[in-house]
Amino acid sequence: MTLSIAFRSAIYLSTTAIAAWIVGEPLIFPSLGPTAYVLAFNRYSGNLKESARTIVGGHFCGVLSGLLSYYLIVSPYQLSSVAYAFSTNGLMLSAGAVVALFLTAFLMLSFKASHPPACATTLIVSLGILTSWQETIFIMIAVCMLYLVHKLYMQL
Image (cartoon, rainbow, N blue to C red; front, side):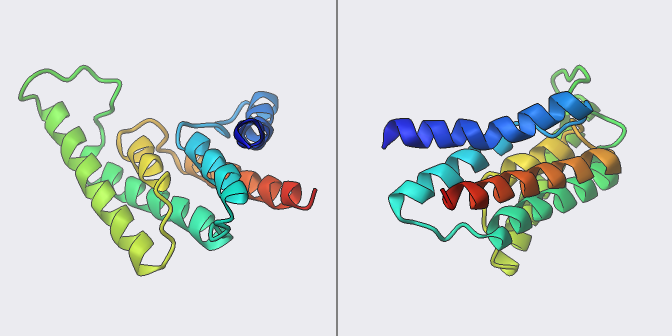
């Protein structure tokens, strides 16, 4: 079972990784790994509650909350900017991350779309790593691709 879960996780992620390589867009990002693992693990644990609503909906809540936080609190600062003790940059990044996580959790619970890896997605966006509308659309395309591959692979 251990090898199967690891293999499925890698297969799921490899589809978006290959697509990212081909099109040169951010179709692979840190929170996609935990999503792939959750889907693969739940397949073998008998816990099949992960649905399109939780996976896609959860990440959508994360993207939306991250964008709101980034553009209302964090921008023009980014995580890649040097933050020093008591800096405005550090304060804005920290406040933006906290607000984004709060909003994501609130929205996921409100819409019954709770998916913990989406909390990483909201930080990726709110900290300025992927913030353009194009990049966030690619985040959602990648999440949908991953879920679709999972559904197709489950048929095997």
